[in-house]
Amino acid sequence: MATIDKQEKETLLIALGGNALIRKGQVGSIEEQFENLKVPIRQIASLSRQYKIIITHGNGPQVGNLLLQQESCTEVPRLPLEILVAQTQGQIGYMIESSLDTALMELGVWTKQLLITLISYVVVDEKDPAFQNPTKPIGPVLSREQAKDLPYPTREVPGGLRRLVASPKPVTVVEKREIKSLVDNDFIVICCGGGGIPVIREGRAFHGVDAVIDKDLASAKLAEEIRVDVFLIATDVEGVALGYGGPDQRFLRHMTLAEAAQYEAEGHFPPGSMGPKIEAAVQFIKKRGNRAVITSIGAIEPAVAGTAGTEILVDVKF
Amino acid sequence: MATIDKQEKETLLIALGGNALIRKGQVGSIEEQFENLKVPIRQIASLSRQYKIIITHGNGPQVGNLLLQQESCTEVPRLPLEILVAQTQGQIGYMIESSLDTALMELGVWTKQLLITLISYVVVDEKDPAFQNPTKPIGPVLSREQAKDLPYPTREVPGGLRRLVASPKPVTVVEKREIKSLVDNDFIVICCGGGGIPVIREGRAFHGVDAVIDKDLASAKLAEEIRVDVFLIATDVEGVALGYGGPDQRFLRHMTLAEAAQYEAEGHFPPGSMGPKIEAAVQFIKKRGNRAVITSIGAIEPAVAGTAGTEILVDVKF
Image (cartoon, rainbow over the protein chains, first blue to last red):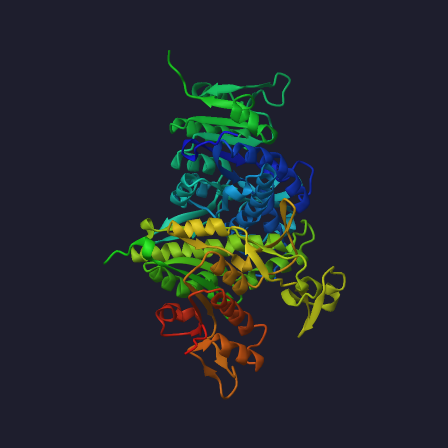
């Protein structure tokens, strides 16, 4: 095999969606999560021969479980949300890293590849309007009885109420210098789990805040800050569709920034699902990113090769 | 201030005991833990001007709380112990790293210092005799009723029963190459939390096991593997004492390997507390480590300077 000079490798940031760990209808046992991870991780191991790799990931069900445990157990001090996010970074980071160890061993490159999972926190603006209007539901569905004394805002959902938290925009990834240095030194880096631990800067300190940062937007911010070449969002559908779920559903292989804005205005992208992914990909391209692709967990390799997924393109003027 | 060439800095590994986070008599709220951390962290920030720093830490109360929550909440899948250790690495790593950010900002060196918390796992031998004879109590005190259906071995303690787990010896830190590379590149590294996530190697995979690795022994292993210059164990007493707690208690400022063996044989070092710390320090010196010191959380700086704590010395033959 021809060796590739590591200085010439492009960087590829892969944001893994929740279905990389837990599929629809699963209870989310650890065995299921490790099994599910094999699909994206084998592809990522293979891609590591051609790209410098950064992996980010979600944490929705995992942080929800920790919240549920806390509400059920009054014997130990309740932890603030940012600490639970930190816990899920440890948990999921370990699962991804050890799965990647196996995949790299299968390829016979494990002993040559540096690989690290790092705890990451992301600064948000305390004046972000999201703090005035929490909209992100997290954690379990609570009965009216369970929810009545909680100090949180809640929203009605089928079966009860769910806690709402703010979802402010990521301003900067605190460990960006470290991540850049690691990538430059050819480490595979797993970071920004769950969108990062949300913090605000107050004078000479970072303080955790009660919020959840969208993991795709945090990934786009990191991709911009460390200047990755390819930003790939892996989710549970094959790409961006017009009329998604309807009779005329049509998946797009590419979409310009102007088209994205037009389809968005036409209501094609629901805010809770595909919306933030497109926003993240668009943001990356607008910040002079090179390539942004939205694809399924099963099609990461072909999407990088340009034969699957939806690529977001700059508007070219002829 | 004279600048110190980073190539000439010695490396200092500091293993923080549980009292760095939670003191005796505290419930262990997050506010208490952040407040307690200021004592060691300010000293470590100061030492980072002269030394390359690696920080390891315990996780006993934190993992105990997660176990208690799991036993109280049957609605979510129970997680194996190694996943809980991974969660505490995220939690405590974030708390140490963000505390160190503040201390480095106070010193005006934050923007120049790379700093990282990494998830670490540590290989143990599946044939380690510890697996046949679990001796380490973890988690909450359970009533006889609570404990009767648990699939774990337990031990009688005042007020009930506690779960016992194996405490096998650390064989190797999986991320040692990464940690060495980071230290060489002048990163402050926080790692090996809770003694590391315990794994065994099976063919081309690492698998988590139900065990807890002593954090001082894991730290000694790391100190040996990446060849640190100074290995410091910070705990809740000022150093090693003969006749500890008795009328003739006498703290030692140093102790040779031969003296350590003699005092050990005389029963001066209780197995649950000072025993493993001395074993870890002795092991490091026997593996041709340079300096090993056991001191209190409050006296890290003077111990490094040689004016506090107990130093373990090689036997010099005249």
